[in-house]
Image 1: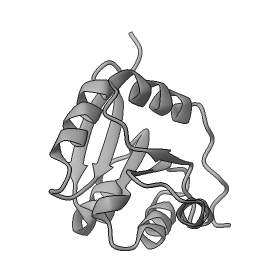
Image 2: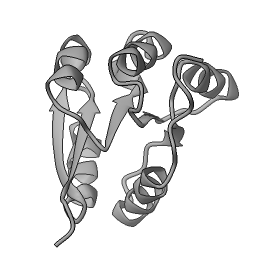
Image 3: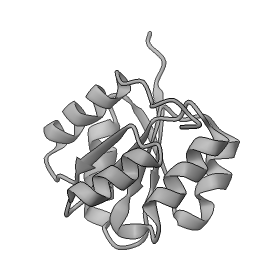
Image 4: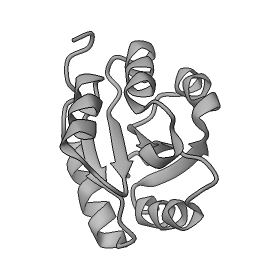
Length: 128
């Protein structure tokens, strides 16, 4: 039997619906743990995750958090999810070490497809 994945969502209290849909989409792949921006580094240090999803709407400084995660876990796959993607924010996220930058969706199949594709990606080299 294949190993069940471990996934971490860094979010706040703003978007409970998206968190719920994300958790339902990830159920076939493994389990989702959640935490907020203040807990992110502690959680990353406690356990290795298949990927860390950073909800850009709930984090004050996305590039800083992404780079801090990558400093602690150089091989981490970090996905930045946002409701309003822009090229500037995407570039900042990738420069900070993000593996993927995606639009938040409430479609379980779309979420599952996107996250499965990210599982196949190698994180960018760290440090840059």
